[in-house]
Every structure is written in C-alpha cells, then in structure tokens.
Image (cartoon, rainbow, N blue to C red):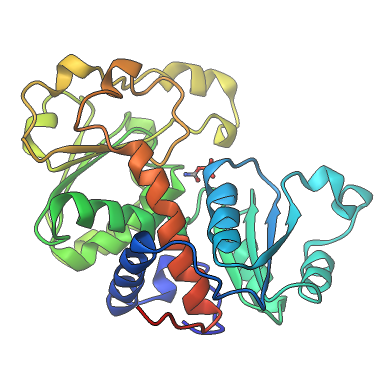
Length: 305
Ligand code: CP
C-alpha cells in the first residue's frame, strides 16, 4: 500500500486489511507519537462530513503531520470554476497525500489517476467509503474477537449507502452470513450482491427489522441517504422505514453490537445509547486509530512498538 492510492476496498487484499487492523491496535495503545512530522496531509471535502474529516485530521495531528485543506469547496477556487483535475494537481504540490470526499461516483478514481501523490477516498457519492470499511472491520473484530463466521445484518439504505457497499464486499472474505433489511426500492445493488454470490455465501433479504435481531451478531444500522434521492417524495415514503428502539434489543444475542457509520437521523432512538450493545460512538473513535494506520502505511512510515 506504500505510496498507493486507496480508492476502493477492491484496491487492497485481505492480508492488507489485517495488517491495517493490527497496526491500528498499536495506535490505539499509543496514539500520540510524532512519526509523521515531516509530512503534510491535505483534506479536500466537497461534501459535508464530521467524522471522516475530523478523525483523519485528528489522526494526522496526533502523529505530528501538518493538515491543510477545506471542508467547504465553496471557499475554494472550485467556486470560480476550477476543475477537479486542476485542484488536485495544485494541492499535490502542497501535500504528501490527499484525502478527498466528493459527491460524484468515480471522482476519487479520477483524482488518483491525475494525482502525483496518493489519494485516499473519503467517500465518492453512493459508491465506496473504504476507510470507513476498515474501521468497521476493526470494530467488528474488536467486539466479536474474530471476523470469521458471523451473522451480520445491514439495515436501511442498502442502495445508496457507500459504507454498506464497501463493508459487504470486505466481509465476503470472512464466511459471513448476510441479513439484508431494506425497503424494496433500497435493496443492495446487484453489482454488490454479485460478490456474495461469487463466494457462495448465504444471504437473506427482508423488509422487516424485528425478525432479524435475534439471529445476528452485528446490527449495522444506516441512514436513509436523503441527498441521493432525485425525488423528495420517494425519500418521504421510506425515511422512517426502520427505527431501532431499546426494547427491540431484549431478545438479542448477548454478543450483539449495534454499529452505525453515523450520522444518525432518527433510525436509532436515544434510549439505545446507554445499552451496552450500542457501539456506534466507540466505532467513530476507532476511526482515529484505523486512519492513523492507513496514513502511516501509505506514507511508508514504520512504528517501533
Ligand atoms: N461515517 C461518516 O462518513 O461520517 P461523516 O459523513 O460525518 O464523515
């Protein structure tokens, strides 16, 4: 992965995932070490973010790197009509790695092709979110002690949810049984389901949430992605399709953990937050250690411990 872009979860192997997760464990034990003090990290966010941008910036800062960039493209020369190519070529003069979120699918791949420095995809439209995927794998492994042979439910917007797409593909390496819960119009795209079928793994599709809860080890809740709908009436029809409430977890397995890439809107009620099975804020915290591991690996810096 050294000096390479990370655009899609397809860009890296199962062996790479495990190296990143193992390195992230070391950063979790010691997150403040000045190993990137010779580096400049650029964060270019053409779409809103809280966790991805700030956890990358925190990860880089704790390792001593300097961080430049923008969180709102309307404050950059994009507002004057500058192309993505010109923005990337310019920022690559100022930084050693570019972390980019963009609403257009394929934009991160394009940026990686024109950039002389590695590009890390922080989400491109409804396509992929590979660094979220790695922190999700880390969170699953940490809570379940293994990634193998788990029953994992994905709930909500499986059509537009880029975190779902990346994570489903990664989990096909671990003999996962998939439980896919969505409204009919937001089913997992066949382009993603193909990877489950290629591995001959079991998957089950549902429209109701409650029957799935007692069967699974992980409930991966997702937000219905309002910004991806062309017609607001279509969004209104499905926006409250699934709302997880604390009492619904009464018959869950002891080891079940609730994950959510966040932000949540109203798909998990706040009474779940104090349930020991709620793991989504810990999951967001894990993002710092996993992104430290990704930055150190791509920038080719080793740690001694
Ligand atoms: N999980 C995630 O991508 O969150 P943000 O949109 O806040 O970055």
